[in-house]
Length: 282
Image (cartoon, rainbow, N blue to C red; front, top):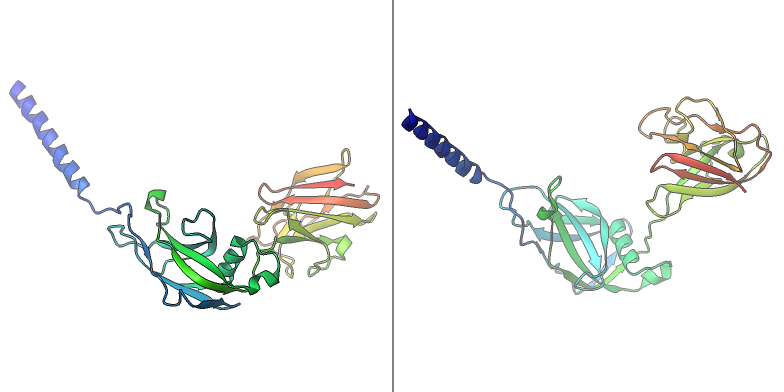
């Protein structure tokens, strides 16, 4: 009996060993170590990146070991070591990369910290590299290419501006196309909007829209139901939640209304990150 038990145990161990070996030989992605961005033939020439145009690069796929479809994204820098850089806000899965002019120009303008159109009238050197990554995979599968220098790049002035939402209601005449009362992002991409306006007595009823022209979509309101929600100020301030779902018809249609408002300036903050609002009487 003891011999049989020992033989059975050995058989199990052998089976586990063979199974383990089989699993170890399964095809899998490898962590990449080589990735090449090709130097464009035009690298030494004056490159004009014009509005509605494009700039083109090619690369060879990183050595992932298996056929896969990486995502490519460019970065630009003033120096070869990329101590400081800007990322081009455009991705592609094609090794023959046709990059629209706008995101490339925005990255270069931001890199050189240009704030006026006249600054973009000069040509500047730009180092470019490409980042290859595998969607939904570990960062270990992300690799940066070699850096390529473009000697003379002239882009048009393209600067990303803060986004805006618009107050639509009694103060703006309930005009769904009115841009008269915008609230701007406090920082680009923050989704926190702020503005200060005079609201007359009897006019405190409104909601916001992040796109104009359509009553049924893009509304930011006190509730989804299309009816006013009464609010009041405590120590000169109201704070509450907002409803916002731009993909759902008639979402966020409930306006804020303060029937006791006696008129004056209101500082408005709308935070679409956590869906809250703060109205402060000044």
